[in-house]
Image (cartoon, rainbow, N blue to C red; front, side, top):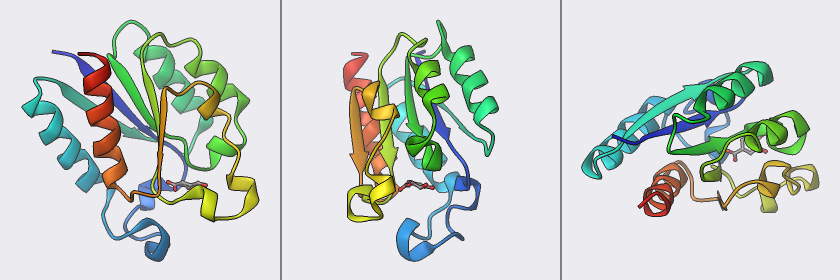
Length: 144
Ligand code: DHK
């Protein structure tokens, strides 16, 4: 059964509590349940992880090499700063879809640039937490 890794960067552990006017009221547990149901219906599985540490996220990307069928990543603030995360994703062979809950292009200009977009097959922004399900549907399509 193909496994899709869903990675989340800093401060997303507080999803649902943190600036709900921007990020909404749903939690990462809600995202995990919705994505697990969608993946299960397609004969796949998901593993959802979150870290506030760049190093931990990089380690999980390395572990995904040769094991995960695809990666969905919301790098959060590391989107805009991390060449290291970009380099790590370039060591991974499968499809990568980047997710942003908010529409980063409608926000401060420092959020308009993404290092991860240089690697991602697709980018979803501004669709709220539904963006994770949209990204999962895309990964499922890409892996056939
Ligand atoms: C989440 C964050 O934490 C921000 O640092 C990004 C992203 C946007 C989101 O919309 O999911 O700039």
